[in-house]
Picture 1 (tube, helix red, strand yellow):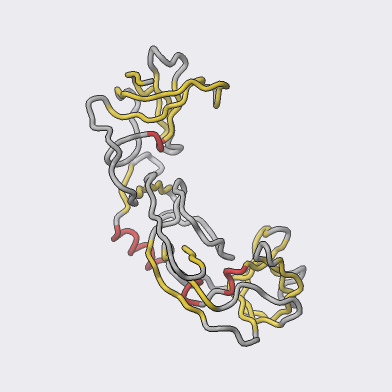
Picture 2: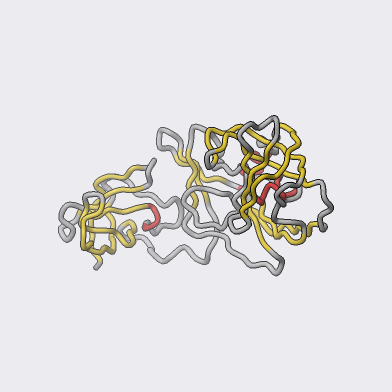
Length: 263
């Protein structure tokens, strides 16, 4: 059902709010993914909007109504076009800045490749179905957790945030009992371990890697991207004092090689 209402509240930090109308007593909850505008997907307290809503069988977060989509009164609410990518910085004071290609380039220049502490160890555990294992060494008492992505070539492990690759050849598993050179970093807890491998290099001969760079996009909260779980995985944002929001459309693609990974 479509109604006209007024934005009661909008939390720019949480990117959610409430719309009041005579048809939705108590208010209709809305998130940024339901805001249909050509630009930053947010609303303003007191703003008049038209919106489509559903009544819930059970109240959620204290509201009986959920907004399917909303748009400012009198504005075009046609979806903004084919899938693409846009992102914004949200400062602590609520100021919004769109992230541009130049911002992303500047960000890349400030992020150094992950560097761990080098060590030599022996693989004591490998879970082939889940792609993780444990390496024992004198430098990592109790064991060092590792993931198959730590086997990837330097070009992939040292890639900038947002780089995406299609990867073939090489190896995706370790062998229990084999000796490896690896780089590790301390962690608070990684599945019960205090150490995590950033890079692992078996001493046996391995097939050559085939690496193709296939694109770039940011790994940002709010998107629905396919990522490759890396041993040094972390959410990245342009500044520690701000959060970053991506639009609801996202980059997709397909490859003909063995597997793909985004950093």
